[in-house]
Amino acid sequence: MRRGRPPGNPRGSAWFPLITAKAQDSGVPPLEYAALDDREVVALACKGRETAFRELLARYERPVFSLVVRMVRDPSLAEDLAQEAFVKAFHALGSYDPRYKFSSWLFKIANNLTIDHLRKKQLDTVSIHGAPSAGSSEEEARTSIAVVDTGETPEEYTANRELGGQIEVAIGRLRPEYRTAILLRHVEGHTYEEVAEIMEVPLGTVKTYIHRGRSELKDFLAEVAA
Image (cartoon, rainbow, N blue to C red; front, top):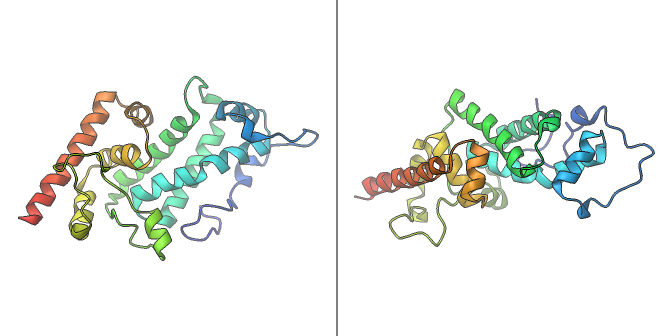
């Protein structure tokens, strides 16, 4: 499914013609896309404007890749899954409801594809300090995750650097749903409501996922530190 992109770099998008083969911009004056919100750009893309497709890709290719790579811990696999998510999303733009945020709709597609993969492959290789295949400090930083932020209580603060190896194992033990909720909330910065929309679960379920995920991490780290 890949089209020759370098590992860890989702830019370039050599696969993009798969989506825009029928899109035409001939005879259409250029637009200043920075002045348009996502809904307006989507409307243009639905009319077959190729530059609108490319604008959506430019806005969200890296955020989608960033989420997926933190979930699967493999840049090459993340590229494939992110590509699949964009292809699916762009072919389904007609079903997008502009009453809701486009980013949440797109993240929902990427999340569902990735969760399905994790369930099927039982891929549990994870690390809060970067993907195992990271080839540079920059890539390691880009693929690392923070389980909790500095506003958490001491009891909830589990991302302890000196316990890196144990934390990797602990993260790997989390159910995909817990892992996704923590990533979306504490890494991608989505609100609880947005996480609920992306994961297609009630708000209370999101809070439960995050609470239980933190609790499992805390319990596991307490065991290894004893």
